[in-house]
Amino acid sequence: MTLVITILAAAIATAVWYAKAPSTDMRLGTLALIYWGAALMWCVDGINGLIEGEGFIEITDTAAMLDDAVLGVVVVAAGLVAWAIYLVAKDPKRVLRKSLVS
Image (cartoon, rainbow, N blue to C red; front, side):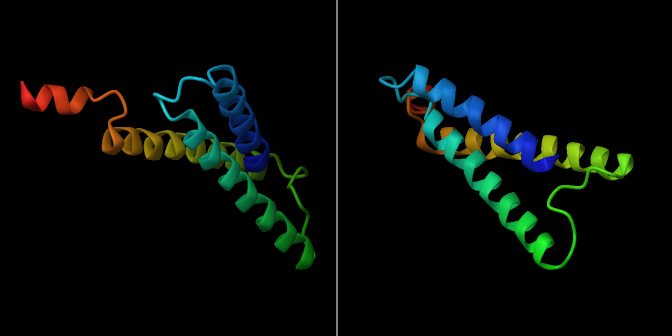
């Protein structure tokens, strides 16, 4: 479930970035890359599970699926927090600089 939620977030971020393509003020491409990187990480984790004899995605245990879903939501939230910190640091609309100067 973590992989599915992360891929869904990556697809949504990519679609929004593509729709707003000429405007790069909010750095949506960075958000999409954060989520695609996390999705790649979960794919590697799933492949490692296959190599160790486990399943790629746990679908038999409901409690494990719920735990994975909660982890997926936490990963998406952490990506948003990282993106927000990146936006504050880069200050693409120069809002922070203008407020500090005034």
